[in-house]
Length: 184
Image (cartoon, rainbow, N blue to C red; front, side, top):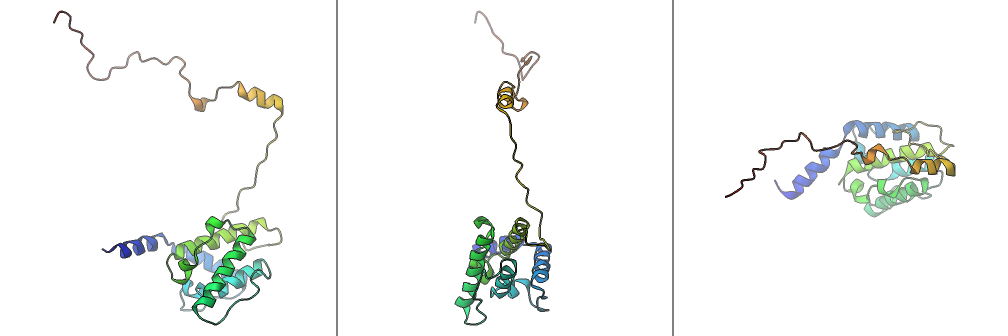
């Protein structure tokens, strides 16, 4: 098997059809339109128009100009504008796919993960009422300790650090004992 086929097989193995379906249903619910029947999920997203429509609903005017014609470079510009709008919306840069992942279908699983990251980011926007996608991110649990509590904590030896109270090597026999021969 050639290296290229091995890499393609590995990337295809990362894809989860249930996650793709869940992401598609979420996008359809937000934009209010079903994907065209008989077209693959990645083919509908490929030109970036659906993605721009999605982010414009979540954050109005995030992508002011969506290219509906003009060829490959205009469609890739749609995807780039979507990615910029994602970062402005609050999706971490590490969760955003590369343009070629979608346009050249290099890593559709990464595109789906980005849509899930966008779904998680919607939880942080109070003006968005749903539907939501993915688990709700944890909120910060800020704690305030007094100086007295902090000093009391410094005197305690945590059990994670370990303790060797009463630990000896008595009774340990590993292999044969050492023999000391005198007079030889």
